[in-house]
Every structure is written in C-alpha cells, then in structure tokens.
Image 1 (cartoon, helix red, strand yellow):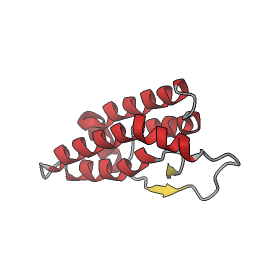
Image 2 (spheres, one colour):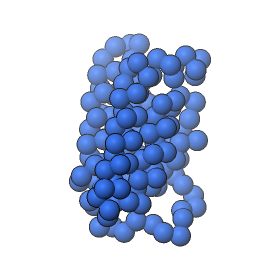
Image 3 (tube, one colour):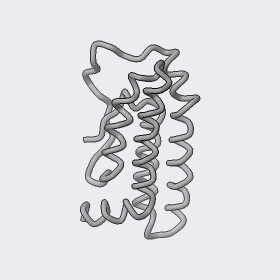
Image 4 (cartoon, one colour):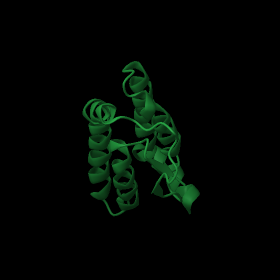
Length: 123
C-alpha cells in the first residue's frame, strides 16, 4: 500500500516539492550563513520522493556543530517560510478531495521540517 501511495505522491505534488527542497539546499549553500541546513535539505529532498511509511522524528544526537541562531533566523526568513507555505498550500489543496487527504497529511507532516531541516529526520 505504501508503494502505491508513494507512486501517486509523485504525481500529486511530491516531485515538485522534492525539487524545491533540492533548490533550497543549493540556495542555502550559496547564502553561506545557512550552509548547516543544506545537508538537511538534501536529505529531505530525497525523503520527499517517498514519504509514506516514514515518520518525522527529532535527531537525538546532533553533530558537534549546531547552527547558530542567526543562521536559523536567516534560514526561516529566506527559505524555510517559503517551503512551509508550499507544503501548506499543496496540503490544503490535497485535502479538498477525499482521495487527497492522505497526501495532505503528508504535506502537513513535512511542513514542520521546513522551519528547521537540521533538527529533523525521516525514518
């Protein structure tokens, strides 16, 4: 069942959001101050391709380096907010139909990661 939902997910916005996460990772490298968030973006870009059967959890053990609050601020303002808005809008649009409710739930689940991709992981 998860495989079928993951295949349908790609057609109903999953591929677009995966590309957005990968572009966000590239932008975070270009902006230099948000580089610590780039690895989380690339992980989420891959995870957005097949989110069914996974859940969002906090990373228990962070690396020795954690992003400074100023870089988190720039991340949220420049990139994170826009990723969260895209997940929110596509999630609401998905929930308008009975068939799209599982896809909307996945978008809402991934929306919280947009604010701090360094802190969360999909397992």
